[in-house]
Image 1 (cartoon, rainbow over the protein chains, first blue to last red):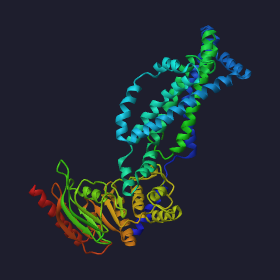
Image 2: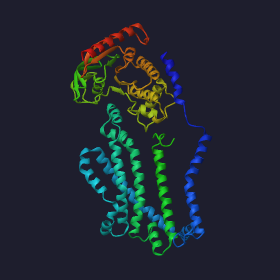
Image 3: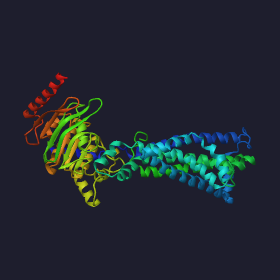
Image 4: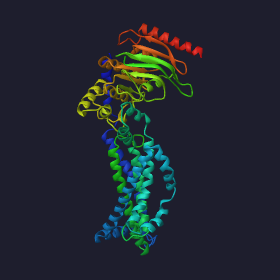
Length: 281
Length: 244
């Protein structure tokens, strides 16, 4: 009797509610169409107002002019230098900020005493608008790379730090108890339960941190640089070239989105166990 | 004697908890702890598991007076408490030490026994409540505990799944003969599974009475012996209700 019931229930394991492939791809097409609707309309409006001369070209150049400007930079090779240095600054700054945030965040998350020591101070620093550091950093480090990278690191630090701390503090005590019953050492509890459990929170912090990193690189390059996408913005302003400004803005958007997408890709791979059905479906 | 609880007391501010509770479990026995909520059933189990240290009295497991989690103890909690970042198979082997290959073999065998062969590589999000609890049972049994503690293990499941898992436990006991203490508020469940039932009453809870069930297992859920025993238990609980 007992055995039979157990066998019967085996089929539960194979039940799957995923819709058929065709349905799924259909839905995907509609989703993409929906998300493209607004950009296409905006682009059409842009073409319309510039082609009909409703807005003069020294204020808003046509999309084609913007593309030509970007193309020109790409062809003479200067684009890659500007793009490269900006990406380099964001990555190095974000890396330093993230490493510091993870180290400090882990210490504060694990040790109550460290929380008492560090957290009030960090919370106070958090309320300083990060751009307020700009003059100080320039004074200390000049307008070279160190001041720019520091500024980006400061910007990235806070979201990552806050998420690491809350990720660790919010690990389900019930899961930790499973490890305790199994006789795990303190180190094993941290490595095998607390760290993996706080990983989703870390990725959330990393993504918003990198977003801020892109924001801060603009500020850093506006404050004085001889290369970089932000520098192109300054050139565009000084030489009244709106096509250069808009071109740089678009490039910022593209690389910013690209890096976020890359992290999302890693995140989805690392966190494929996550239950997203509530949001996605 | 696998487990001996001697004059265990742990009383919380709101008078929940237990007072002067003593009982024991012999090798291979299944002991049921029942009582109304607030009578400290789960408190007893948590202290035996070594998760709460703030108590008076002694708990002796396999001859050792415990001070924290004992290596011989395995626990099945009310919630499955699986690790969502691990697959079903990894969850079962998670707490095991030693040769990973042998552990995997053992885990596969146990998963088959709990009716989940083929589900080894699923993640927790893909499991139903009943499946998750099966994995949690497999995980606890995999460590070959000398003493298995179960804290209302089936109370969150629907009636049918519950009965399936009770039968599953009977199978496991038949094979592994593991000494078990099971906390439940379901009298029928205790009557169906246990050799002895310890009834707690009052607030903080004290041992009110012990019932011995001699019937061999598997038992008939609707048998007259169990029904008359249930009547006695209900009466005992009733007396307490009048007294309060």
